[in-house]
Every structure is written in structure tokens, then in C-alpha cells.
Length: 357
Image 1: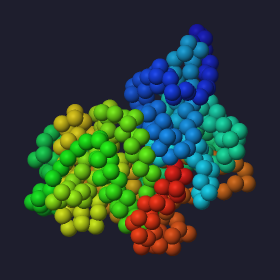
Image 2 (image 1 turned 90 degrees about the vertical axis):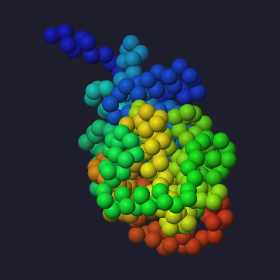
Image 3 (image 1 turned 180 degrees about the vertical axis):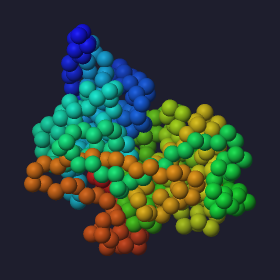
């Protein structure tokens, strides 16, 4: 009979990410809440806001006694090419509603929808989390997640990799490649050069360099760059996050020279070793689109794909935002971008990519 008296009303507010106490309270909640990811952390929202110039609106649901019951990090993405949307979390692969139980889910979703209306934003996208409500559309058909444990040592890790991919990793170990990790400006510069060439070759625009710098600054010792060099030249590189015992290799790629050297294979194998030394026990290979080469590559490493469920809601009369480069309508643009001079792609890419979210 007393149970209803124990249920406290919830208030929704926008967090002040400049305040250290607010950040610390939210960070502790995300750390302890099942389903929390680095993309739920205030550090991610702050880095995205500064790195891409997109506004952050971090919603917090609190009980009457001040305890946090749920959070929803939102990025206000505005692009002349891809339209306007509130995205949770911007530039992340996760970051949907994170809550203890179900009481905060509907209030957070409704608050986000009302915020979108006040901002004049026609689309709202939530990446993961519980179903926000019956008005939302869910999609589990586009993206896959790849996560598995890290083995106890290098030899066990090799045995955990399926035979064909294991042979590629063993071959990569025969090449004269140097491995280094760091967060210094020169590390960021080397990583960005490799990553920019990699995404240009795939036909997609590169993110602003400031996004990488700000993520590294915000995450501090919980992020770094691992670089593979051949004869002093960087050929593969990955920027990773380390959080709650899991390593998240997030932005990685290789130059044209990386393929013959098996540098990408070496890079991820060395990252598993590096993450193990940092105390990590899980390797989150991130998301990939269904039916793509990156998805096949991760499966070859022994990662079992699991569907990711995203939710969206669009204002009546508006079309859902579509920034998926696999959409056939972008086929010509992708083909042209692959042939674009690297200096031009690096100049034009950030202007386009910062609006993708």
C-alpha cells in the first residue's frame, strides 16, 4: 500500500556542462548505470560541441531528492546539405536514453521532443537505449555492433582469431613496423593525416581535426592514439577510448601503403595488447553497416555481430533525415570524392562532416 508513496516525481533539466560538480554527478551515474557508454558522458558532448561547432543540450531527469534517474545527451546538428536534427549522441554510435528503470524514459523522450519543437528541428534521432514511446520508429536493420572479450595474452588472442584472419595477423608481425601510442600534438597530426586519407579513399568527408583534439583533451588519460609506422612514415592509426574496462577503437584507418604491409591488422592486434596492459577486458569494435566490408572485416576477427536499434521521430510533414552515404542517391558524390585531390578533400570535408552528427 505504501509503494506509490515511494515513487518520487521527476524533473527534467538541461545540465550545465561547464560546472564540474554537474559533470561529476552525471559521470558517476553513467559509470554505474548498466548500458552506459562513453557517448553518454558529458566529456563527449563537450568535445563534440567545441570540435564541430554544434550545440549540446544534455537532459537530466532528477527525483525530488536530487538523485539522477536518467540522462539523454543531445547534439543539435544543423547542415545545409543534410538538414537539421537533434541526435543522441552526436557523432557517437550510442548515447540514447540511459535510465534506472523505466520511470524516466517517457519524460526524457517527451522533453527531447518538445525541445526539438522549440528549436525548430524537424527530426530527433536516438542511438540505442529503450523504446522512447509508441510515436517513435525503430530500426534494427542498418547497423551491427561487434564486441568480445580480450584474451589473457597475445598467444591466446591469436588463437581467438579465426584461422584465415590469424594468418594475416601473423604475416603482419613479419613486417618491420613500429608501434607508438600518445596524445601529443604530433600524434594527433599523424593520426589525422592517416585518417583523412583513409576516409577520402572510401569516398566520405573527414571530420574537423578539432573534433579529435577535443576528444583527446576531454578524455585525458582515458583516450590515446596508436600509430603504426613503416620506415618512419605513419601508415595506420586509431584513436581509442578506454572506459569501464572496455577499449573503444573509434576513429581508425590506413593509407594506401597499409594494405600490403597488413598494417591495419597489426594495428588492431597491438591495440588489444595495449588495452590489456591498461586493464581492459573487452574490445568494442564499434558499429558497421550491414553488408559492408568493415562488417565482414570485424566478423573475420571472431566478433559476432549484434543488431543495433536506433529510434527516430519526425515532425508531421517533414521527411526523415538521411545522411547515410550508402544511400544510392549519394553514389555519384561518393565516387567523385574518392577521386578528389587529398588537399581539397581535407579542406572541404570538415565543413560537410561537422553537420553529419
